[in-house]
Image (cartoon, rainbow, N blue to C red; front, side, top):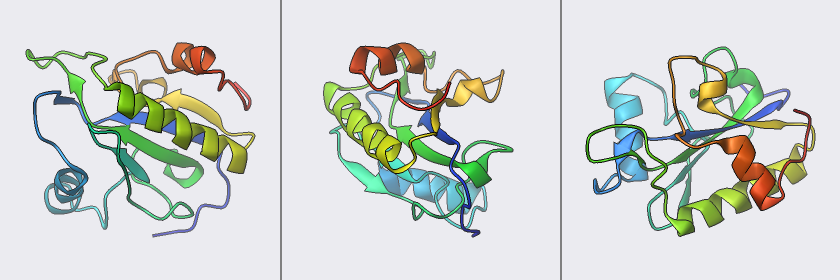
Length: 147
């Protein structure tokens, strides 16, 4: 894996799994390595349903989470994002949102010019992370960086 030379984006993702599924960091890592043949999990961070954050790729390494932008972005994935009918839904727990706020704020401190986006900003076929990241940033007072 290459080392990232610049960080222009912090990208928020979701696992596109139902809230009632017991999906863990290890599950996502297995999906990425065994089913997609990635060298490692594609994200730098995964936030599980209980709000715990598990580190994936080393922060200075390229991710594998947003096509054409892996060399310049940090990827944070929230577990969940689908309702019982497998439709997009903002069903993340308060604990997940608190941890997301901490991770985003921490990364903004390290990379002050990085723009925070949802994955769907980079792909018109994605709805991930299934909530309006920019509105959430404003509500949380995290709208730092360029936009």
